[in-house]
Image (tube, rainbow, N blue to C red; front, side, top):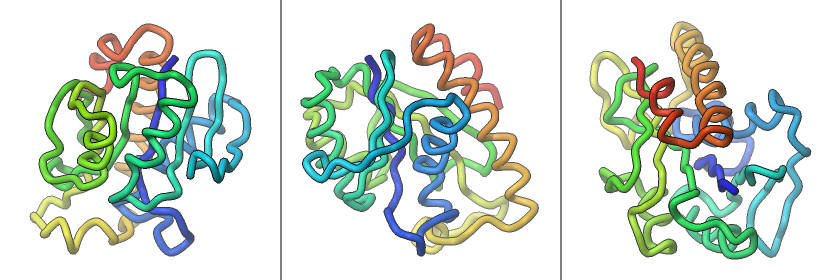
Amino acid sequence: MYLIVGLGNPGKQYERTRHNVGREIVSQWQKKSALADFEFSPKLKTFFSKNKKAVLLLPETGMNKSGNAVRLAARFFKVKPGNVIVLHDDADIELGRTKLSFGRHSAGHRGVESVKRVLDTWDFWRLRIGIQKRRRVDAMKLVLQKFAPAEEQIIKKTKKKLLEGLETAINEGPERAMNTINQN
């Protein structure tokens, strides 16, 4: 069983911001794959959707405390860190580029650091989704911006690729999904 975590901030004011791209992709995948509707668990501090192969997670803790929900869900659903896949924005990668990797450090991403703290290991999967503009913008200014219309087209193509990659990850393993996801 895999735990697929879409990092982001809960609340209407954060919808469609760059920082929430991981959360939005997991939500879109749930709809596309006709998985069970998300339900809120106050005990787990998250919205979740579950089938036989995966639990999708949308933490309601805020980005920087995402690990709290991941820890509770990983214990409850008995998922080992090696089967956790965290989707998150990455301001060091250009918009439209993606990278799936295992056992890598956070590069300063506080949501990823929170997950590492609670799992007590770097041995989990990170699906990094590029949000950086062509002309480099400071990450703190960038993450809460919404995508411009031209950027929305790039994100739409990126999401399509990632939805295919996630299907491959849970059916054939994340290593196989790297072929799809890491092609830029």
